[in-house]
Image (cartoon, rainbow, N blue to C red; front, top):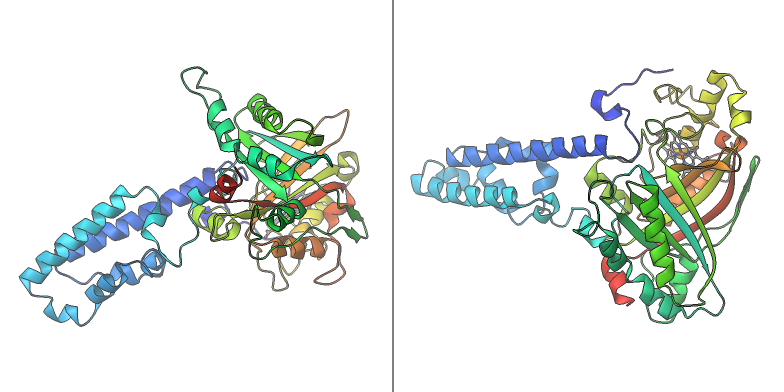
Amino acid sequence: MKALTGGQSRVVTHPNNGITRSSREAKTEQNFRAAVAKVNEQMKRNRPAPMVTKASSRRFYSTRPHEGALKEIGGSPLALQWDSALFGLGLGIAGYTLYQLLQDSEDENVIHAADAPPKAELAQSTVVSGGQPAGGFAIITLSSKADLAKVAAACAKLPEIIKELTPDEKRPKDALLPVMAGVAFGTQVWEKLAKNKKAQVPENFGHFKERKGKHGKMPETGGDILIHVKCETQSLCWEVIKAFVDSLPAGSVAKIDDQYGFQFQEGRDLSGFLDGTENVADAIERRRAALLPTGGSYVIHQRWIHDLKGLHSKKVDEQEKIFGRSKPDSAEHDVKAMDKSSHVARMRDEKGQKIPIVRQSMPFGTLGGQHGLLFIAYSNSPAKFDKMLDRMVGKEGGSENDATMSFSTCVASNYYYVPSLKELQSLA
Ligand code: HEM
């Protein structure tokens, strides 16, 4: 077993609460601003600006309109005129303007261009944001009589519901902020909306297909609409889902299957293993992993029921083999020595590389009834989900089956399309 390496990048945090993410983001932002300030300072002093060629800051510059100017500052031909006081003054002013622009910009994406990930503002609020202590997950099945266009138009009003339930002078502010809620359509439903010219099928479209492995099935259980809510309290998650369901046209809902998730300990799955240590944490990388250029996304939602008695009757090192992680601190087992059926081994590609998706799962359930994991993850392509699920049931990457399925049973699965805010509005 390998000890944790890599310092901060392996810091264990709650999977979704954004602590690691925001500290990284802050660091990136800080490094970036420091680099820009340095460039500006150098420009003011009429010296070349080496920082712009650094790999760590290249991303921020590569295709921005300023790229040409910055490249030229670092080399010829403008560098030839370096000792020209007038030119230096001009550059100083340009640099200062750029610096101000960056200072003014809260979103680093404003200053990105082509190679930048889609802006978070294009997407619904659940997709790339961090986690909250409470979550609501409602799978809605529409009745056969439902008028899909009218249902879709009602779904488009979710942002208004969130606004309505967001604390203002009428509601106490302390416990309730922030509220994040997103509506997604079963991929079959979205396809129907597209056929009726109410929507467009985005790129990389695909449906969930049932899978069977040595430890059990991932059944195709359908689901027409998924509501995912994240906030401080379960009560507010419940309220958002209730308000949403009440807003749907009368008679359109056949079944509501709503579950409420909670943060367990410091971000552990009910098995006792930390969940989310290798989740995509960096804010920019989350957008890259989860968003289509439009701001749309795909989400997989599965409900897993754990047999905790069965799992916990095993010795800890046996449990650790199931996940490929140590139980106390999620230290990764050496990739080569890792059990091939361990969850982590099955979740990597053939080369052992990570497959980037944005996981936001939460434990749920009761002791007297069922309990386990409300698995939810966002991606810019369902092909990534397909690959991981196929690897779990030994359909891809060898015949090994994911050992987590030996103690947990999947009882619900579907893929949903999460329209961008613009696409959502166009359904109204
Ligand atoms: C019973 C259901 C599941 C449980 C209890 C579970 C739990 C865990 C745990 C404890 C880890 C290790 C810590 C971490 O890096 O997050 C992990 C990693 C991961 N899980 Fe799951 N998971 C489940 C299902 C799934 C499913 C269905 C998917 C994908 C569709 C998935 C994708 C991943 C990925 C991508 C990783 C990171 C692997 C890496 O290190 O690169 N998990 N999961």
